[in-house]
Image (cartoon, rainbow over all chains, first blue to last red; front, side, top):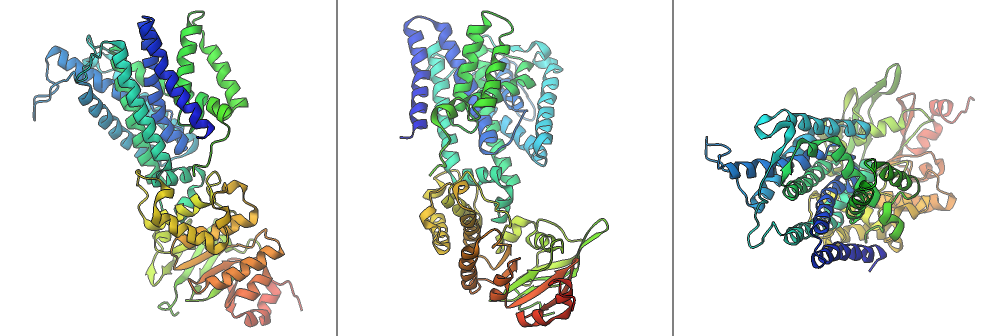
Length: 327
Length: 251
């Protein structure tokens, strides 16, 4: 077992142990914090496929996070008012079923990623960052100006959506759902990195010229990675909306995109457990320092600065050393 | 021009950048089993010509043929799929990856199914066999698990050739494979390239004249974007134009 794997196993256990402690200590709010960490880490796992493996600095992943959130909000709000989403050409009704909401969230955010990616991946570098940012902002302002679904005020969902056989209103059970999904997503990301596709994608990040010279097209590899990445972040958005029972345009804001990226940079770009470490530190700082000052982001900024200047591999990189060329 | 038996051929290729004529009406061909060296002083337009042949740059006029098929409109990836294997003057390898991974990448490109997400790249027996065979041929098998950034300059050159080998090539285009190699290194590579021509002909851009005179069946001399002579080693050595323009011999 490599050192990084030991650290990863420890992190997974810690994420599991903390809410269990909170459960027995009767601290439901702590369970909610752990759930938030798991969901935000999931959003980061999605972005990390594009950023870490593909080298695609997307500042527009809030678009997918928000689409996932609104997929949940729209479906659930129609279900709670018994008002069908569409009656023509065929009847589409709302739903309070999490699995169906997840599927819709993944498919819609994947479709959005396909369209956004197809256009923005024709550029690179700072232009790519700006175009993804612009798409994100487009969704943000669209959500603000769409009164049907709450506009600026967002949408409240009164009862958390259901999952067969579980009581999702029980914090520990909802945490379990998010934990399992996070583990599955990280398992998938790890498999992707070692797969033939992952080899080609990682090579396209390091030397696009090389990939072309052996007969593959970097654009297509990146587009597929971008879609997979958007789907996972979209799923996280649906879960985040369910956690808060509330959706608002803030999910689409560029600050959201930036925060997801900050998780990855803090944890370590391209590191499997990087997003989890980043999200956990972010939430911990928000909780501890946020109680002392409204300006707690200053301390986050200092942390980010230290990592960018002195620990390029992020927290995981500092603990586990340089990544192994996976053999 | 005998287009039919040439593996790779250019027909009247021209390319200019503003007032600079980088290629002017260039027609060269690469025949089965031969090493055709392309020489010329710095700035003669060798790299521009190689770029156009490999697909990285579009000629203003003229055509390029691979096995008789017009490939002028195809991009780099499509040309590689048809068996045009190119090596770079400055190594363009995935530096964070291992030597074996770079070779497997070539095999994956040749196989043409890059979107497999299940199973590991190194666990695919067919890809791995192709990759290991290529590494074995260039003598890098002992370094299969070495990170590419840790290879010496000469070993990177060898890896460039190994990746080209995994493509099941119909023609090699090599841009200064000897650059930066010591005397021993270039001697070894010269011997290796000599054995490679049986598999596929090589269009060789090279500054190392010992290597060129040892290896080349034919030599083309490029000066100011134009081919001023094509012929055997002896022809080129005897050619007065070449001596004047290239070897700096004013007599």
